[in-house]
Length: 93
Image (cartoon, rainbow, N blue to C red; front, top):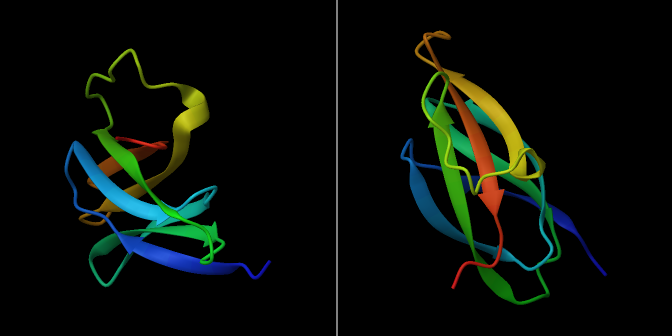
């Protein structure tokens, strides 16, 4: 099995769906050149699955169906004035 690290652009939006190889392991979320990205360790040879990304700002309500185990990372924008927290739900249909 050959693994590699891939990066996925994120929109600063409450919910979005991205496709990642099944079993991808999120590593980090950060801002690069003003754009938030998710980096993940993936096996590019396996099937792609749809994953729901949920982004919540500090102090905003979090849906009850989101769990701490789905937390990936947090990132800041506008020199730290805005802090967002990223959660990943796998296998969205």
